[in-house]
Image 1 (cartoon, protein in one colour):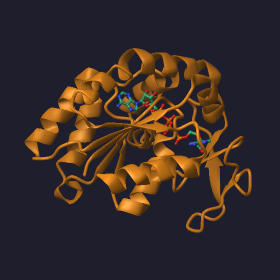
Image 2 (cartoon, protein in one colour):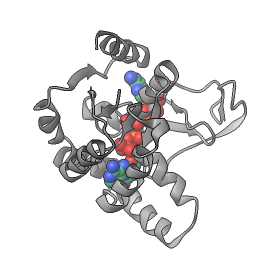
Image 3 (tube, helix red, strand yellow):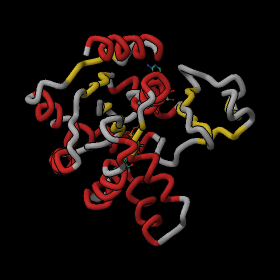
Image 4 (cartoon, protein in one colour):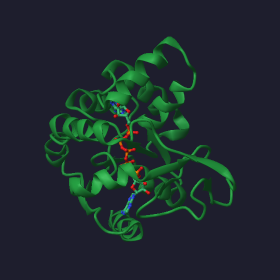
Length: 218
Ligand code: AP5
């Protein structure tokens, strides 16, 4: 089963993807995480990416589709991917369909995480993530045991970091771009009959339970 986890910045896509990885043994394909890994290389490309991401704009479809095809084409990941943060516009959705077709795969489910904008700003500005396992915590809603360290068993004592695009000015731009370019994709996937709506205003556990219920019913 390939799943798209869909929703605005801060909706909980990464949080819920990591639970699906554990429960369903799926592969999380987060374009944001792949791009942030590229930033660490300090290449010419990474400087351009940093600028685009810090402004809240979208990285070019060409770069993104290339990153995606490298993963979709791997036989070990076939029909077992959670797409997190992709596709983000109609061109990316069409490119994904063509790729899936080429590798004899399909999208079975689009989980649409619905959250009001007023909550999203707090979720984003309060987010801190582990520098190693990437687990997100939240200073307001899901505080780590220690405000500076990751408290998971595997990463004990690793540093918690804030993303450079998690500030109020970038957030408003990211939300605007989501509404203009990404939200219209719901119509595209609704016409394929694969969208399930999730009330993602609820607590992290309640959202996980809604998702697990939908997957059990498939
Ligand atoms: P990306 O990394 O994909 O960011 P995003 O889509 O803006 O989403 P976020 O990671 O901010 O939020 P999330 O929904 O994963 O929320 P999370 O689970 O962390 O993209 C970053 C940038 O990269 C883009 O702006 C763009 O420049 C570029 N990019 C990426 N993909 C691209 C693409 N396909 N095309 C072009 N450019 C691309 O949760 C947020 C916080 O809320 C956490 O602190 C968490 O603990 C908390 N939380 C989660 N759920 C709940 C809950 N139910 N209740 C309370 N708190 C909660």
